Image (cartoon, rainbow, N blue to C red; front, top):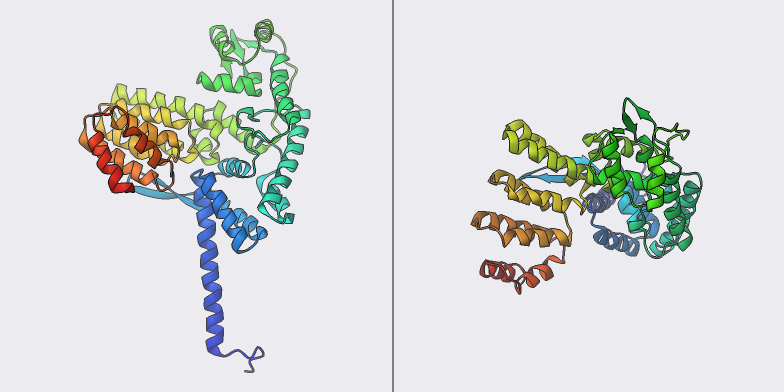
Length: 411
């Protein structure tokens, strides 16, 4: 057979080997991106993307982001780990944060389409500008059609236009003003509340997971609703009036999210991975804790571990306080599960919370587990060093132990 390329067998082997090495490296980097997104390490993700752009080009970075969205990443549970698909809403939330648009995720455009749009950009900086203009335009359009649910002013970056910020705030308030609540068998149908951002937040804050409540419960909702007294009074007068509004969300993933929150479908919330599920998961965690306290049965213990697994999947900072409450358990098995679970949350508040537990427990083994967990967290949370150093200048009964740990770990 004639070798048309004039390549020797050795050259073909070397060419194939080089290609395989490049493929392995590509897979490694894509997995690194997937892990960073799965663990909500946005700062690390920025560094990874910048390195890809520097060593290759921006289009390669986009391809790697697209590839990461279809991969699995490991979730530690106790001493073992499992592989799980990267949650679509977590991916979306981290991506929007990466491009400076956190809080605007509920626009209609799907995540993959938004990434494809960025292929035309010349650099990460250009892509950020294009992403913001695309998302802002889509957000304004969504709000103009009455879809403002899950748009989160609290997380909107300062460089988002004032027009959009004001439009979202106004839309949230307007969506509550015109509500009507039908009454069936003495209970108030609050489904219209769930389709407003202020209503959803109030219901989640109170741990309400139903579409029908009593008059007293309705008053509780009004008490935490972030609207004026005038609007609250109007809502009281709107009870037992025919509702003529249809309820819909333009983005299907956020429609699934809302339905899972209303029905407390923990499995779906876990699969989606959105931070918006955190208040519901916190309430469910406390319910499972109460169940286990009352029975001490193995089934309730398994349920407790499952809800902790859901918190790890969402991996949002607001879970840290709710999870840390479990260290009050007299059962050391729960205490160790709590500490190990907190080891999956790479936030400064996690380090501070663990150190607070450390200084308030007389159990040496628990303190050792906490220090091991902080040692693990420092690899993903560089602020750990400063937080531990600061604690060395505070009042803690075990400063000598902590000082030894600090010098062994960072000096």
